[in-house]
Length: 246
Ligand SMILES: NC(=O)c1ccc[n+]([C@@H]2O[C@H](COP(=O)([O-])OP(=O)(O)OC[C@H]3O[C@@H](n4cnc5c(N)ncnc54)[C@H](OP(=O)(O)O)[C@@H]3O)[C@@H](O)[C@H]2O)c1
Image 1: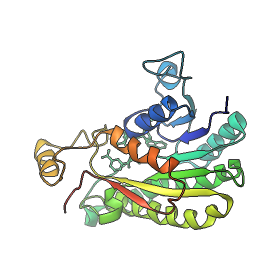
Image 2: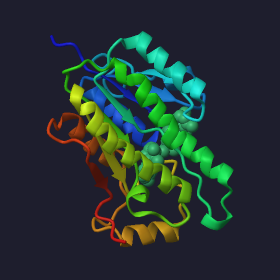
Image 3: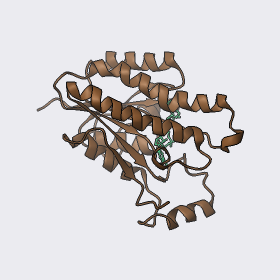
């Protein structure tokens, strides 16, 4: 029996990250998830839904992307736990919407700290865990806002655009050692992040989407699964937006 591959999925407690972690665990990966808020022991080390015997629980490490110390501690804990990695899915992220001209720079910096700097710091810290010559892969969860911009999301769009640039740099740098890097840019996906959208906004989004529906977290997991397996795809960003027309 071959050794299972190991993947770190950040922000694996809910929404898109949870769907990715569950999908990969079902496919036989060893998954190390991260969480930020305290969800309690049971939720953190949840047995896998449906088939508790066949699929090992997803292990969890606490990490707050806004804190260098927390990111470094999480990277150390992951290294101590596994010794080697086959993939990272940088999914954890947050948003802070507001009108551009009234947004204080401190708020912008705080969001960049979490979504961009924290993600870059964690990635650098984990890179030594990839073995040279292996088929390893990094997938960064960006956003449609980082590709086309989005009203009221200045810091979020900047953080996600930065993540796409970082992905391209990684793809050039790390491919020398066999590590591919790609990004996924979801459109509107039904999670806690988007549940506060009012009905009018949801109607507007559905109307503007060729597939006439909001996405679900599994739609993003589909693209991540593809990118982890696609051995000749490097430095690209896949939009998962149901064909949203602006
Ligand atoms: N939903 C969408 O429509 C959409 C669209 C485009 C892109 N995205 C991106 O997809 C990713 C997942 O989004 P989602 O909708 O699934 O969001 P979500 O339901 O709000 O979940 C966010 C996840 O990120 C973790 N997290 C939040 N702040 C963190 C921090 N400071 N440090 C470490 N972890 C943190 C959360 O952990 P806790 O549960 O422990 O707080 C949670 O696991 C994000 O990067 C988001 O920007 C989402």
